[in-house]
Length: 114
Length: 113
Image (cartoon, rainbow over all chains, first blue to last red; front, side):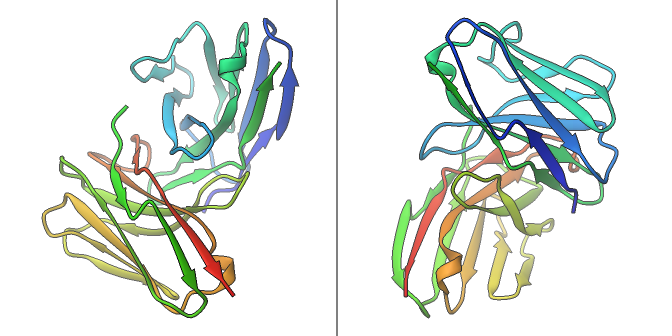
C-alpha cells in the first residue's frame, strides 16, 4: 500500500492564527487525496477531496474559505486552517486514493487551538 | 454527513475469544472496507471487499460483503492484546479508490490478557 506522511504531527496555535498541515504521498503519485477530521471518540468525517491541479471538492457544511486546500503536485496536498478557533481543535487525517489499491491514511495531525 | 451504523459500539473480551462486529447501511455500496485505528494514529486497511457475498480473510480476520450490499461483517478469531483498537467499516457507493468513502461509527475493542 501507499506510504503517507503528515507534518506536523502536533501543533498548538493561538486563536485567530492560521495553520498549515502537509500531506505527502511517499511512494505513489496521487491525483486524489482526501482530508478528514476526527473528534475524540468519533468517526472520521470527510472534509474535502483534493484534486491535483484543480479545486478541491468540499463536503456539505465545510467552509472552503476556512479550510483551504492546495494540491499543487502529485505527491503533496496541504490543508490550511485559517483564523483558527478552539472549536477547530481536532485530529486531521489525510489519505491517498490509489486506483487498483485503496485509500491509505497518513498518521494524522493533532491541532489544538488555544 | 452520512455514516454507517456499526455494532457493537464497544466490546470488552478476554484474550483468546472470538469477536464479531457488523456494519449496516440504508443504501447500497459497491465496496466495503475494514480499517483499524490505534490511538493517535491514522487508520490502517485490514480487508477490502468488492463483490456481494464475498468472504475474505487476512490472517485471523475474516470479513464478508453482505448479499444485499447493505451490510458487512468482520470476525476476529483467537483475539490477542494487540487487537485492541477501534475498528471502522467504510463503504463506497461508486467507482474506485479515488472516490470518497463513508465511514462507520466504529467499534472499540478491548482485550484483557
